Length: 379
Image (cartoon, rainbow, N blue to C red; front, side):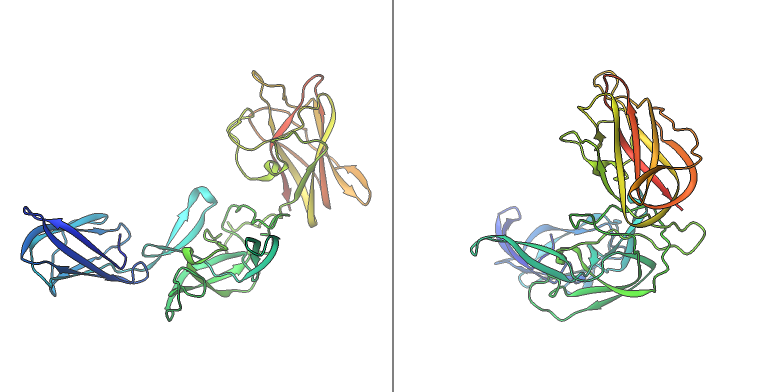
C-alpha cells in the first residue's frame, strides 16, 4: 500500500532490525521513494506491487535502473544486500482512461491511474434536525449534475495543495472533460438521482467543459456517466414519472414499476415488485404522473404471478387510460391487451399527449395481482 509512512521490521537470517521510510504523494503522484536504514549490511527481498493499470513501470536502486520482467499486475522482487542509505525509486506512470460498464447501460467512468473521478458538484447544506451538539444536515446539489460525456478527450490539471486532498477544495488533481446536459435526467421526489438509461444518449444541449475530481474527494457523486451519441443509434432519455396505485402491499413499492430491473420470469422474487395484495378480485390501478406532457403510442407490462406458492395471478383483463382534464379516457384503437406470463405484454394505440396514464386491471376472483415492470413508450 503506497503512502507516506515508515516501517520497522526484522529481516534477514539473523533478524536485523531495519527501517524503511516511504516518501510519496501516491495516489495523486506517480513516484514512490523508499529509503533503507540498517545498522549493518543485510540481505533480504523487497517486494514492490505494480498494479494492473500501470503499463510501463520503472524501477531504480541508488539511481541505477532495475529490469522489470513480469507484466502487471505483479510484484517486483528486489533481492540484494541492503546498506544504510540505499534508495529505491519506483515510478508508476498514470494516464487518463475510461472504463465502460456494459451492465449499467453502457455508462463510462473516467480513471487516472488508481483513481476514479467524479463530477465536481457544488454543495448546498441545510440543517433539518438534531441538536446543537449533534446536528443533522442534508446536502444537495448546488450546480448542474445531469451530464453525459461527449467524447473521450481529457486534460489533467494539478492544483496547489490546500489541506485535506480528499475534499472537493483540497483535491490536488482535476480532469477537464467535454459534456452535455441531459434535461430529462432528474431526481425523484426524495431528491435521489434516478437510474441510468440505455446509451448512447441524444442531447441538443450546448457542449460544456466540466471538472472531475477524485471520487474520494466528492461527497455528491456522479461517477458513471451516460455517453452522448450523435449518430442514428443515439436514444432519447425518457422522462421518469411518479408512480402511484389504488392499493400497495407493505414491503412492496411503486418504484418497482419503473426501476429498469429486468425480470427473469413472472415469478421472479429476487427483484423489487409491486402488488395489490391483499386485495382480491375487483378492479385496481397503477398510475404514472409526468412532470410535463409526453406523447405516448405504446405500453408494455410484465405481470407478477407467483403460482405455486402465492396468490398473485395475471389479471383477467386490463386497459390503459390517460387523463384528459379531470376525466380518465381510454386510449384509442388499442391492440390486444395481453396477459401472458414471463414476457412483456405490449399494446399499441393512437398516439396521445398527456401528463398522466393509468393502467386499470380486473383481478381474478379470489386472487390478487402485481407488476414487475410497466413501460410507457414515449414518441
